[in-house]
Length: 162
Image (cartoon, rainbow, N blue to C red; front, side, top):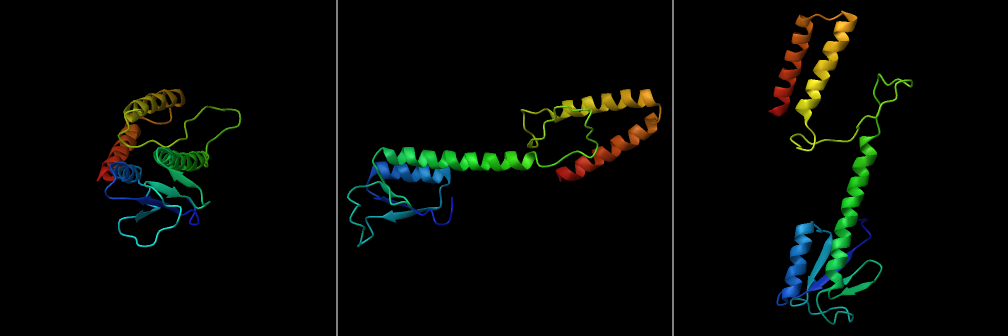
């Protein structure tokens, strides 16, 4: 929502439908909407002949059942813009060891800690098994080095949780 996009909602504290609309605004966190209580205002625009009534920055007037549809659409648009921002940010980096010949599909999206949709413990087990296979092939790292790195990793993870 741009700063110039000011939206006004005219409502009455005595209107049950207006109270419902106010709850939706609070639920969707549409705190940029300017609320105008018609019960307290002496001077109102001439177009305000019923409540709830929305006047958009483009001077569009929205009334009755269309108000909730409009608020729902505003909420959806704000979620879409946040999602687009996250999608843009999540793919704007590269791995140092990317190899043009080894094109792999890599999930570069964000994950939340404790998100049940992604099992990070399972990923760690896969990583450990891959490391063991690679080191057995190369014969460069012995078990004591692996144990050392595992302890360092566990220590770092414990500090991050605090």
